[in-house]
Image 1 (cartoon, rainbow over the protein chains, first blue to last red):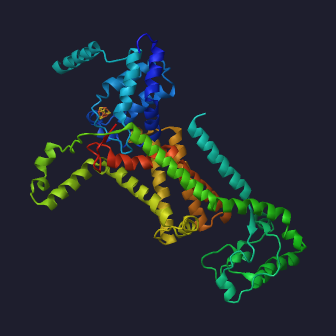
Image 2: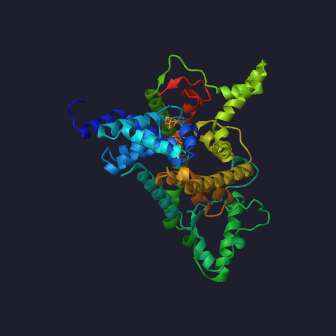
Image 3: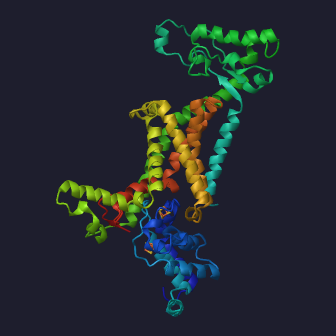
Length: 136
Length: 361
Ligand code: SF4
Ligand code: SF4
């Protein structure tokens, strides 16, 4: 992987998992039954954007369809989705047998190459903010 | 082109072709079409003349001011059979059918005046040839092709799933939340029956019925009926028997008609859910609506065929063709959740699996 350009690296990442991603994306019936199995979904008052399939479809689904050629804003949106809204705990369950954490992990791999990953200073800023709210 | 657009295009094309061929002209059956050896034994003599089938336009007769009942009598015809030759068989049948047409034509002095006016080779044989041979094709080899494609496709998809997952060396036992153990009277009980009851109750609670009772129930009923209805229909079993020499237990047609109504109702529920329920709307694509429509068409045409609402033969043809397309599409589209579902429910390890679950992604 060393010495390759970012685009090529992303291509490689996608190529390696192509068959698995294709299988999962084609088998998802968009039924939303996986929603309740994610604790993040429960803890954020059932906000649909925390639904496992939403997270997977709007990250790797998008990346895969456009072969990794996404705009920066789209990556920015995705960043929150796959780094903050999912902790890869592997507890979500799709009755159709799709591995959602594997899909999200693939999306993370691509985003990491693009330079969109969890930045801890941003998180600590958040904590500062919430501390302020709490001590008010 | 995106695959689902291709699917939809082919689907619409086939529906368009069949309905164009159907138009409003019907091919009237020959008096010998439904004759059986038993009939001949009981004294009905097959027609001794042979003429091309008659192609008749309902529309032109309607325009001339005829009422349905003038030909389709209701007396002695409680089940509303629309095909004359089903009862009027052999020479006697021919007399009746001839008199019904010819009397009216001579009385009104309009329409064809000689034999070939109705028994025209040009119209009937040509159109009849296409439709009857298409019928024979979809009922015979078509059925074989359909189930072969279906079986091989399912095999391929499941092997794919097996390829991407692996067997776990040490399968983890099912996770049971401590809270539940503490609160459940069943679990504390030493009685094995009670323990089993607890297990059932627990699997139930953590299954989709526990999280989402409405969707769980509705979708279970839907999936149960969608298999029961086609597999237990007497007419289908005759087809299976002719093609594969197998048949299943059958249920009365009236009951299956009610099943079909329920299935179509639930499909409307799925559609509404997709449109109005935010969490489903957010992940819906056009393809999902396409698939829903694709599965609905065979059931809607089945309903129409049973109640004989439109031209029976064309509806039936559309029903068979669309049904076969849907079955062939199962492994290659989102409907592939059928083989995946069984695999995932029983072999994938998760706290929610029903079976042993010793495979991992
Ligand atoms: S991931 Fe599975 S449960 Fe979730 S929407 Fe897709 S098919 Fe349904
Ligand atoms: S892996 Fe992500 S999506 Fe799945 S249950 Fe955990 S947090 Fe939710």
